[in-house]
Amino acid sequence: MGKKMHPGSGAVIGAQLVILLILTASLCVQSRKAAAENTYAIMEESGGEKKDYIHWVEFTVPAEVMQKAFRLDMGSIQEDVHLNWVELLAYLGAKYGGDFERFRQADLDAVTEKLKSGMTMEELTKDMKYYAYYREAYGAVLDGMVGYFEQETEAPEDLTQSGTGENGNAKTVWLRKYGLTDREKLSLHLF
Image 1 (cartoon, rainbow, N blue to C red):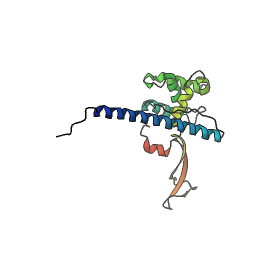
Image 2 (tube, one colour):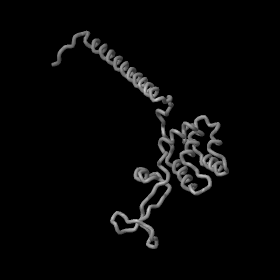
Image 3 (cartoon, rainbow, N blue to C red):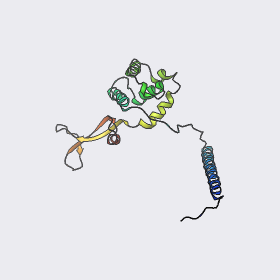
Image 4 (cartoon, one colour):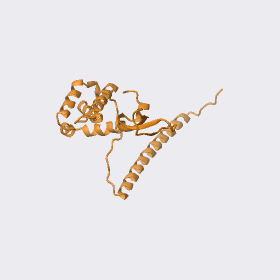
């Protein structure tokens, strides 16, 4: 047995909800404006200029394409021309407008051949309007995952220059390697 509602109470509650929604939206807009003004004020105080930055990016590069670019990077580290995997992916991203369903191996092969023949990425991308965007966006995700790192390993028996390992007895050496950095090896199973 419920209480009877007053005939106009539903309309009053609805009106209150609409007013609450309008006030909440207004508060959100005002807080965003205040945050933006505060950011610009801090930049002016520090003498900095307003820097545009990417607010959002959809990173949809397929694992297969990343693996191909990674292998090219790894395979060229000791060559005269080092192929940077992030730059290769950014080139393809700019070429396809980020739609890697259009990926063709021939496009990757063509850009690597041009780079190996002496052209620079700057020359190849000078007319690509969005290359800088994709380089920055993909770099935000991928830069630092591949590079030089040092790894401690047991020294071969015939190697006399070494320090001691954790147990104080085993001879170890530090090797400088290039590839997925150690922290990334733990979290990435792509490669």
